[in-house]
Every structure is written in C-alpha cells, then in structure tokens.
Amino acid sequence: MTADLCDERVRENLTKLKLGRMAELLDSVAEEATQRGQSHLEFLDRLLEEETAVRAQRTLKVKTALAHFPVPKPLAAFDFSCQPSIDEKRIRGLATGRFVANGENVIFLGPPGVGKTHLAIALGLEAVARGYSVYFLTMAELVDQLAKDIEDHRLTERLRALAHPKLLILDEFGYVPIERPVATFLFQLVSRRYERGSIILTSNLSYGEWGTVLGNDVLAAAILDRLLHHATTIAIKGQSYRLKEKRRAGVFRLPEA
Ligand code: ADP
Ligand code: MG
View 1 (spheres, rainbow, N blue to C red):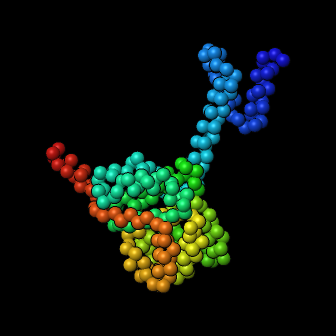
View 2: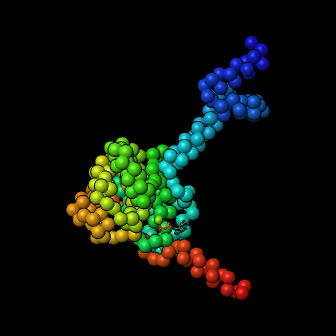
View 3: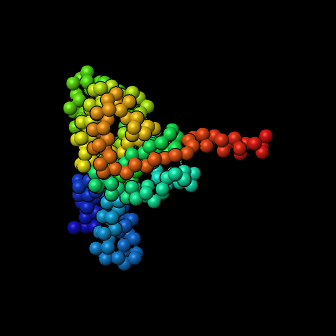
C-alpha cells in the first residue's frame, strides 16, 4: 500500500471511530515522532493522550452545563482572608469531594453577602471536576417549578429528577415562604436522598426558624433530622462582601477627590 493510501485510510478510520483529535494531530505528531526518534508505541501513546484529554474537557463542559450554575464561582476566586469566620481547611477538605462520595450534606448558614452561594457553587464545580453529577437550584426556582408540576401532575417525575444527581445544591432556603405541598415535597426529597445523594443547602436562617418558614414544626424537625444526620454545618458570620467592596471602593476614591 502506498503511504498516501495508508494515510487516507487511517484518517477515514479515525473519523469513523470519532477520534477527531487524533485525526487532527496525526501529521504533526507523526512528524514529531520521526524527528525525536520515538517508537511506534510512544507515537500512539501521544495521540491517545491528546484524544483522551479533549474528551475529558468535553465531558467536563457538558457536566458543568447540566449542573445549571447561575454563575461560575471557583474556589480559587474566594478570598478566605476577608472571611475569618470560615475555616479554610474545612472548605478545602470539602472540596476533595469526599462528602459527595459518602452521601453527606453541607449546610452554609449566615446573613446575606457572606459567600454562601459562592462556596456552594465552588464545591459544586469541584464535584463536577471529580466526575459527579451536580444540579443547582434556588428555593425560589423550586417553588415556581413545583407550582407548575402540581398543575401538570408531574410531582413524581420532579422528585425522581431531583433525587438523581449525586449532589443537589439548594440555594437560599428561607427567603421565600414555603407552602404545605412544597414542604411535603422537600421532606420527600430529603428522605429520598438520605444517605444516597448529597445536598448542599444555603440559608440565612438558623435551624430554629425552619418550622416557621415551613409552616410546620413537625415537618421541619423531620427534614432537619435527616438532613443533619451526616452533615457539616458551616456558619458564616461577618459583613456582606458586596457592601465591603463598596465601602473599600469609597475609601479608595477618597484621596483622589
Ligand atoms: P450569599 O450567598 O452569602 O448571600 P454570595 O456568595 O452571593 O453571598 O456573595 C456575594 C458576592 O460576593 C458574590 O459575587 C461572591 O462571589 C462575592 N464574595 C463573597 N464572599 C467572598 C470572598 N470571601 N471572596 C471573594 N468573593 C466573595
Ligand atoms: Mg446566596
């Protein structure tokens, strides 16, 4: 077989096998291998590594999109120095994803603007990077969604869908009042996920206030019982980062004035 024919057939087969990156790099990697006197095995290894890397990147992108994060907030962008109430080591420990592997929960409590959502997303991104399925939604979104689901008689499907991801992030528990059907749904969801799938929950409320928001102390106790059995609670104190930034901007502007 001539070299041209061989080249053509290799390309055709790579395309058939959907090894696009290998086809793309075939020439340059082959040339490099010749120049460096690499073995056939080294040549093949290099091509396969390139293909695998591209695939891993693609999977990560798809999983990140499926997670439905409102904004990307990586852990690297979190400034621990301006939030002394947070134990950085604890967050770094959570970022390893072990809590997800164990089906444990993480609860971020604290006033607005202290970084609860940021850290919830950051841990979500770390979990995605480790191959876990993640889904993020705010309590307001859930309440809206459930109102539609009740009309469409789709609550069972919704429960199944939200029970599925290995990590479910429920953001901003406590801002919107919760009616009985939603409270019952939450109980079912937490029960379904108990010891099977992790939940990260953020809230501006203390646990003592859950009964009021859920309009039912017994249900609140039952939800908390399951949620907190295997859970890390991170209570964040201090000032809002948003306001801090504003204040700092004000201070910096002063000398110019
Ligand atoms: P919360 O959910 O507690 O109300 P957020 O996580 O939404 O607060 O934080 C508010 C804004 O401030 C976000 O843009 C977030 O990225 C930023 N932020 C909060 N804390 C920090 C921090 N320690 N380092 C960097 N950015 C922060
Ligand atoms: Mg928030």
